[in-house]
Length: 260
Image (cartoon, rainbow, N blue to C red; front, side, top):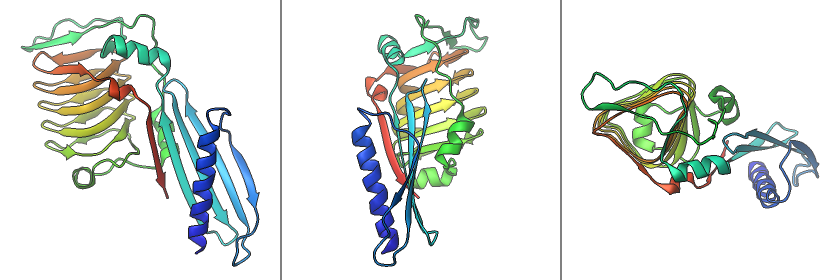
């Protein structure tokens, strides 16, 4: 009974906050509520807000607790790309910002994409900082295969995803260190990949709806398909047998909510 009351209070606070967000910027706050009935337990609501302005990423956390240390936490996030980034991706699905143009690789059928940005700066973000707010580690390969992504943000220092995974669902994958997606891996849902460092996408990988923001170098193997949009701060090396095609749906706002 008590937990259900706390859950209802949290949902109500989030609902009101989201309705007001269009007119008033959300901010941290603490509220004292009337005692719960039955039980006469005191209730406190803590609201915290964190932002990554360059990404248009906003986290909202509502923590409802009573005097008996019962609690219910609801987290909500939204990613709304700033207008300059949105417009750049409309112009080109692949943007590489480095001024250092790599020469053609000695490997056969490999070349470098070097589309320029028309003045757009790469968005600044720290995956380690984002991880503190999300409190959600990247699932294991077997869990990804079994459960897919559940619409939240999954953070890891760095990882090599097992070959041959078939992952359903939408979500954000954030890598603080070098990361790799193994050969023959398929992500069928909408994914946003935030990479602080280098990202390697293997051979015969298919990302059906992907927005990739890579602060390091991006490498894409042979016969892979990325449908969406890609921005790389350093260099991009994409095998000539692979394709990156534009999909404006990946530029639409990403919204999600989870409870703890």
